[in-house]
Image 1 (tube, rainbow, N blue to C red):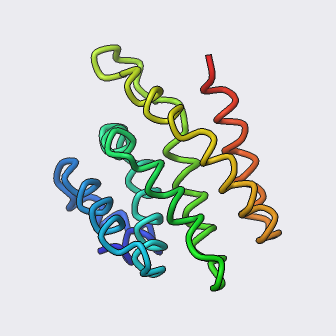
Image 2: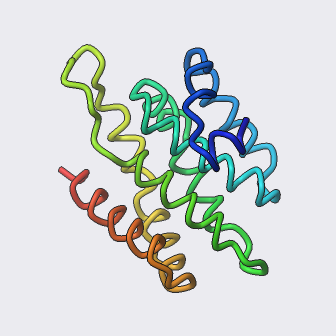
Image 3: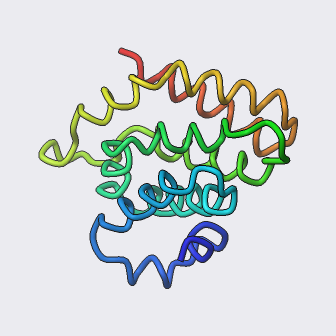
Length: 155
């Protein structure tokens, strides 16, 4: 499931997903296996795919410390090549930090803004280190997007 969502962005799998439990399961898996770079990489990819397709799942991920979990996955150990994980992680962070897409005020919430703001400094440092260590186009592009999103999220 993680591979299918994280690597392929498989819409057929996405259509079979029911409710927000999936986001909770992915976050729990990432928390439960912090040293497994495969779980972290495909978990980040799955979070990115789900957050791009469902505002309610994106909100659930943010409220359940998704930004913090992805940030820690990206930061990880320095003793291995984490380029693919860093790329997936920055994609996930970009989609998690996007402004809410709902115009329905009964759905939109300020809780996600507060949750994201609490980890701004850690995100900034991890993104900066990733951009220094991995000077590849996707890392640089998503790193810049994240900085822009963080600056816009401040009010």
